[in-house]
Amino acid sequence: MKQGGSTLLVGEGNFSFAAELCDGVDRNTRIIATCYESEKEIVKHKNAVKNIARLLEKGAEVYFQVDCTNLQQCLHLKSRLLDRIIFNFPHCGRKAGVKKNRELLANFFLSCAGIVTTQGDVHVTLCRGQGGTAADHPTREWHNSWQIVAMAARAGFVLSEVLPFDCTHYYGYTSTGYRSQDKSFDVDLALTHVFTRSQPFNEMKPVVMETMIGSEHCSFHIPEELVEKINRNFLQKGSNHPVNIINELLRKQISDMANVQELEDNFPLFSKPCLQCDDAICRAELYWVSCSSCQEGKSRSTERVHVADAQCCDVSMPVSDLRLGNKTGQNAGCRIMNQAGVPDMSEDCRRYCLRPTLTGCVHNVLQRPDFRTGVIYVVSGTVFRKCLISPQTMPAFHEMVLVGACSDKTTADILGLFIYSVERAISFLVKSASSTTASVDTSLGSITFKEEVSGKSWNVCFRDMNHPDFTDLTVAKLVCIPHKQDNNELSICITSINLDLLSMVLYHINDWRMLWTFDERFLNQISATELKPFCEFSLYPPSYSHDVSFWLDGDEKPDELTLHALVRRVSRDSVKELKLIDSFCHAETKRMSYCYRLTYQSCDKALSYQQALEMQLRLRDELEKSFKVTLR
Image 1 (cartoon, one colour):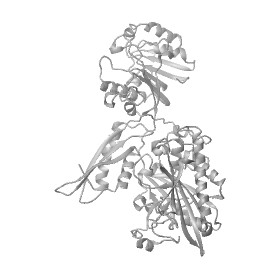
Image 2 (cartoon, one colour):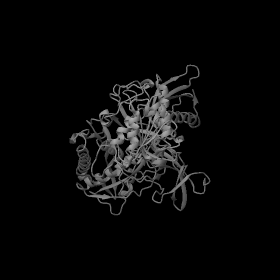
Image 3 (tube, rainbow, N blue to C red):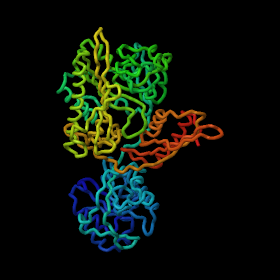
Image 4 (cartoon, helix red, strand yellow):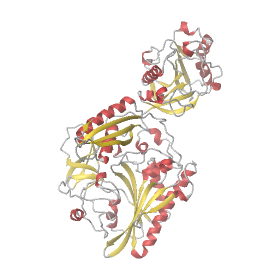
């Protein structure tokens, strides 16, 4: 246990644990020992009088008839903030069932929330199997356990550490109170659960970004599910965020092998909808935002952010758009896109989308006055795409784009340089991570380039990783396409690297949501000099499953990407999985029924059953409004 501060013990029996603990702490640690019984009842326990005398002699405080579920009402604890609260082997008494003991835990944690400091912790020791976590051996079935993590979540606490309870550290400790008697109980394989406060689920406020389009001040309402992803500045100079560390290490490694020119991310955050960005991105993945005058809607309670460098402008078709057959690299206007079968939305000239990729900057790079063949241009920034919910797919992530050009005669040289530079740079990072953990393959074989059918596109994948979620994970893509500029035939090589996925692999982060947490315990673990594996500060988070079923008319199908985006928004990114589990057509009405199962689980916040249920009920309301469905 940490030294210093104030430590409150509740539910003491014969005070033997408190006495032994008091002997083992320094003078800077203040011990406050309490019990539920009266002094007259407690002295009947063996050695209780002697233990109380030891505590008082050491300067500890001892109080009787203290209700651990109502600590703030205790006269001696009012207006006090404590650094640590310890509750060993809680029990309602006699043959109380698991439900009563769960409520005891829940009310205890709610009581702790009012008197423990922001950085404080709560220790609860349970007998083997009672906690209901994977740390218990043997593990009870969830419904037959005390569900301690879920009970703590009601009060905003997360489980941060699980330790074996070792009686040998407290030589004079003897358990008492078995079935409300002065009898000991079995403490073998008991576990101490250490809980800390989590970040709350704050009310989401609409965010409006203000910028310039030509000479006009305009504003854009940011999609609610992206509000906490805008303007986080993870890539700013001096940032200790994993994506920035990986970004800088990659740039350094590539610079050591090739002539590199680094570019600032001064490219538009918004682009026109009639102009596409990448052959691998469909229109359904785009986040649409409507442009309006800054004078509109100012009476609303919104947070307004002025972004000077996120100007909106027409973005030309990048050379990487193979899907539209733009082989020459010339700008593709609405007419060409219409011929390719892409709907023309140019009549809505005030509608834009958040940039889905930085490959749209290729045209800008090629038009630079100082553009030279044989040089690799590098730019990194945040991009946004609708995607299905999973631990490895993210609606906002940081992309690094490498752009280089050469004449047709030296295509093989520039392509080889790209492949070599990217492979060696990523492999260097893998080796660096492998020096601190054996969970990442140390051989260069862990990186592979998978050539696509076209022969001009490669996916950069991790393979043979011990972690099952990172097997064959595509972290980058390389394309090589022809381009004509100033009557010269060039070959353009473009590499797009997902810095977030690469960071997850190297830092052993299992869920992309952790990269966007506001909890300082995340960044406190990150080192710019050593790629150490990330250690979860929220262990065994509870999960809750809810189903939602609805009817759709005729042959209509729900737009999966829009549905997943809605779920992200309503749940505040608290849904870990959304799965279609059933669908059928009604024989008479011909309407289609769809049933989805949502698994609520937060990787960094305390999520209670009640909170998940409220999110589910709100989702049902939003489905009726947004999808015009008939709920079942």
